Length: 286
Image (cartoon, rainbow, N blue to C red; front, top):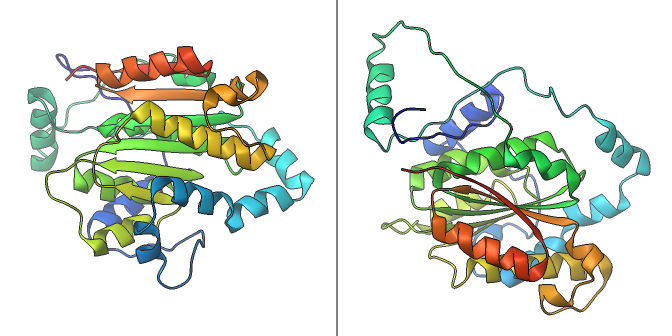
């Protein structure tokens, strides 16, 4: 904590961070899920978000979840999820005086002083274990708690949907290999410089990632659409809105938000109240 800056962090292996670093600097990653054939990049970029989600739900990984041996699902559910990573890393975005000064000191490698960390404090994200389906919503560097949750719940022990609003292309490229744990990732990229087709293909090759190079017309509307499509697929229902879903199904969902936008927080809170989907958030003030 420095001044008015608060930096969320997630626990991750060093090897995972090296993956992100190589992604920014031109290292090709392996595509873990097969949605289409050789032209998957162009295919995915031509889809709307609704089409992408529908095709992804019908793709191989979802059938693998349904057809997986019950013993595998039991093993996932019984794993000790509390101490999965031996290292702690702090992701800091240099956007203010304190964090820019910290970056300068680290680059010069002249400081040998110890760094003291107070905490960690209990996070609103700690309620994730109470829900079957998680919509991890983030803006900017607020993605870090989502990474921690996705890493904590492996495989299909939870449904993990990431919805990320980001305007820094390097940040997007860095974290792209780390969001492969999300069953679906919807990225709203709002940077001034549009991503090239080759960049989109490379980023989306890391998993079931959809990129829209603009803000969503309605973030609650986009999240509601995702929830409805998941429920219709899993339960063979034909709902058109979240309100048409059975209450017991809605209460199995939780939306978690981390970021600095009070507007996003308020919009999601209102959506939560009207749809009876659980909502919690962490805010930072830059």
